[in-house]
Structures are given as structure tokens and as C-alpha cells.
Image 1 (cartoon, rainbow, N blue to C red):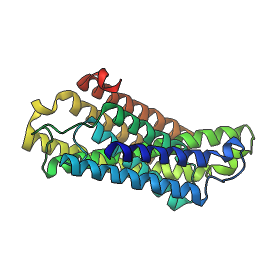
Image 2 (tube, helix red, strand yellow; image 1 turned 60 degrees about the vertical axis):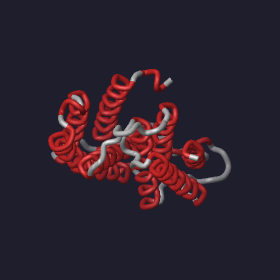
Image 3 (spheres, one colour; image 1 turned 90 degrees about the horizontal axis):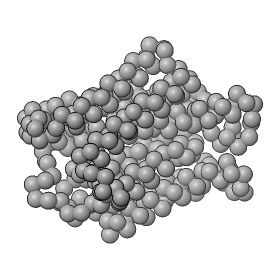
Length: 273
């Protein structure tokens, strides 16, 4: 049931992205804003949540510990935030980037394999739950900022070339995309900061430095520094518009590459093949 629910959610995420992409492909039907895309997004997030609940019931632990559960939880948060943006703005274009991101995370989770939770392997306690929850939410907000930035750059390129075609009709205005990027970064930094602080408390009070590892803490602090730098530059007015979009994409790439490298080094390449 766990795998089937994840596959169903994966299908619905793909359907959401496809429905939004229809106008860009100049195919008849759909505007990227209609009820079918919203319904598919709701179904995807709902099925994904059901999959996480199924894991929690089966494993007897929250889907926070382990590579596959954490990837699935991160994907769920990205999908949920994407759905929230879609609902609040009535613009479905965010799904063009958010849906593929979630699909990549789900494919990686399924490819890694959930498997049984070894006895004593799943840490517990409020410090751990709050630390991982806040950290994943912070990373999901960074992913939303990345999605808005990617759409901003594509829209900017089309406008600069004076092409007022499907992209111009389907994508939100540049100001709205920049606003989404700004809000995601402003909310993401304190959320990730909370995750870092709670992680320090978790290490100091419950498990100790040796069990977590310097590399894990280093990547977490590195992500916090990168995000903090982007937020500081935005607040100072040095990153706006196109430069802010480029900075967000670069920051997301650095953070994603760092976490991917950490997971591969700690758990091995074979678990992803």
C-alpha cells in the first residue's frame, strides 16, 4: 500500500504539471489555471499525505528518519507549498517547476527504498522531530523560491525578446513571481534557523556529536549561511528582479548539491541505482 500510494501521488503530480503545460504546447484545452489542474494538485498532495500516514502506521515512526522517508516528507512539503501558492494566486504556472521537483524526490525515495525501520535506529523525542520538521520546511521554502525564480527568468527572457505568446499568457507577472521569491526566502530563513538551533540542541542534549557527524552538521550550517546571505542581500536591496532570481537558483543548486553529496557519501551510490 505504501508504494502504491506513492506511485499514485507521483502520477497525479505528473498530471498536474501536464495540465498546466497544455497551453505552452499550444494544444487545445486548459489554461493552466482551471479546475482540472487544481483538482489534480489537491489529489496529488492528498495521496502523498496518505502515503506518509501509511508509512507512519507501518513503521511506527514519523517519516523523518532515514533517506527515503525524509525525501518523501520534503517532497510533500514542496507539493503542499506549491498547492498553497496555486490556491492563493490562482496561477498554476508554479506547478511547472514544483511538480517535477516533487517527482524527482519521490522517484529518489522509491528508488532508495523505505524498508523496515531497524530497532533503535529511528531517533525520537521532541528535539529531533522539531529539528527535522523545521529543516525540511525551510528547504521546501527554498525550493518554492527556486521555482518562482525559474519562472521569472523564463518570463523575463520572453518579454525582453518581445514574444507575447503562451508564456506571457500563462505565467504570472514578473512582480508577482518576484514577490513569491521574496516571501519564500524571508519565511525560509527563520524556519531553517529554527531547524539549526533545534539541531544543535538535539546533538547537545540527546545524541552527541559523534553519532550525527561533522559532515551532516556542516551541510546544515552551510545551507543556513547560503540562505542567510541571499536574504541579507535581498533586504539590503542588492538582489532584485533578475539578479534575485539568479541568486536564488544558484543558492538552491549549491544547497541541493551539498545535501545530495552528503546522502551519497553516507549511504552509498548503490541505494540510488
